[in-house]
Amino acid sequence: MRKFGLIGYPLGHSFSKKYFTEKFLTENISDCSYDNYALKNLDEFRELVASDDELSGLNITIPYKSEIIRFLDVIDSEAEEIGAVNVIKIRRTDRQMKLYGYNSDITGIRDSLLPIIEDNVRNALVLGTGGSSRTVCHVLKKFGLKVDMVSRERKPGVLIYSDIDSGIIDNTQLIINTTPLGMFPNTEGRPEINYRKLNSRHILFDLVYNPEITTFLRMGAEQGCSIISGIKMLHSQAEKAWEIWNNDSL
Image (cartoon, rainbow, N blue to C red; front, side):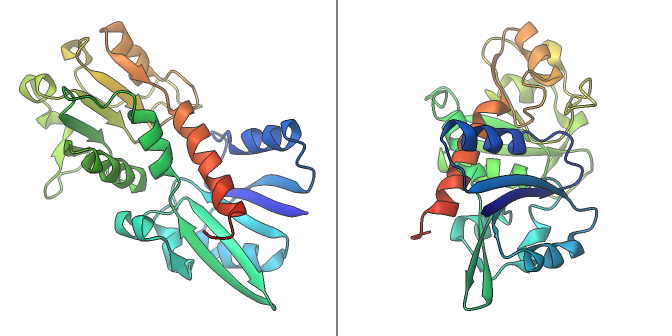
């Protein structure tokens, strides 16, 4: 039996176990299982991977996408550039174990945005500054967009929410929420932007996928914005993770 799972804390918001369990059933994959590993402290990670020889791969979620890097033996170049890992491949040979880190969020974000990145989409606001935010910025810059990050706290080169005036919103076509605001069970949460200034020229993308339509997206849609749910990203990055775990060349 090959075992896979998700590491993070808390994990009540996650769909990964449901997604992979259903995938194994529908594709008749009988030799694999997927479980959640809610680690309050990442120092428990070493014991987890050492204690089960059948553990073959892991997904990493909030808040460990950056902190997990210190445990890894090899890191994919793009994941290293971003400073965030959300997929670990475990190779075990002759009683030796090596941990390889990747970032499948790159694929998920790229697949979600590719249909809407047109010539008129030039400027983006990225709400949040964590590991997911860095991945989003990486993809947006590859698309050639100008990117401004937004944080609740003043940091060099980063806007705070009170900086986002009408001029910035008017000059922005794409706004992406990379924070956990609005995630189940706190579904009323949302980034503090002036939603009344949004209109049909704006595209809102939320990395939160539970619920599928967050308050951030709903309020944008009410102003005429195009919206992109995080569920597409979830499916795309999950399939990329599965490819990584099963492709011997990766």
